[in-house]
Image 1 (tube, rainbow, N blue to C red):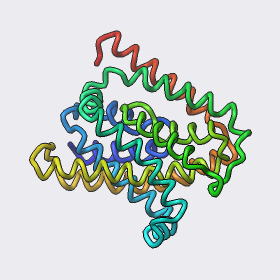
Image 2 (tube, rainbow, N blue to C red):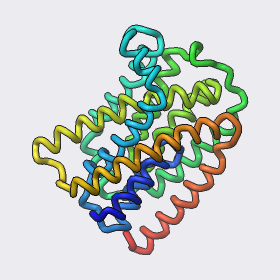
Image 3 (cartoon, rainbow, N blue to C red):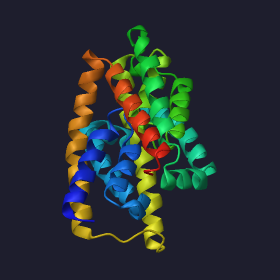
Image 4 (cartoon, one colour):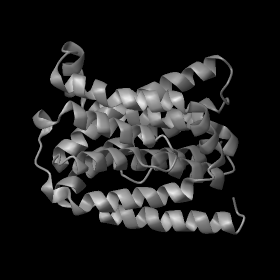
Length: 260
């Protein structure tokens, strides 16, 4: 992996982690384009670590509050939302890793992401629940959607924000809770892949290129968080839906023609 390839992948990860268009799906396509298919999940996870740093930077006050008050309402909501994600991830871990490596379903997953985004956008103006009004049942359902987003081209941010909008949570609270909920999810993936590295089960990559990609992922991730919050406050998700529909159609066409 060259520095240029690492930089491009870092930019892709940073921009797509918090926009509702699937970072993992884009990383798969990027790695395939560069012939880095064997770089695998460890590369993806280190780039995700960059975006973890980004969201921690944006929400450091909230994180500090949850650490100081682990039994506060917001801490428990994040915990409840994380439980179904963990259950789904552990139950289907081997299947998800196989799918992520082959990419056989990502075209369809981009299309499904678009459908969910379009549907949620049609009801977004009906949201009224603030963060203080989010119920534990809401958090659990959002966590289920996050668990489903372990599939490579189902957008984690897209599905969790959509689930929140479906539960009549207002747009600002939907983004806030989605991004908070991403922290244990990404951190768990980093820990899991870190263990694989220590066990010799992950691919070794050039350290300098890996650090460059991670740094760019963090910087662009920070920008993407701020941008997504602004979009939800004033804009529409339908543009993202159209984008992933087009991308999904291109991927399916390329697969049908035998390009991958």
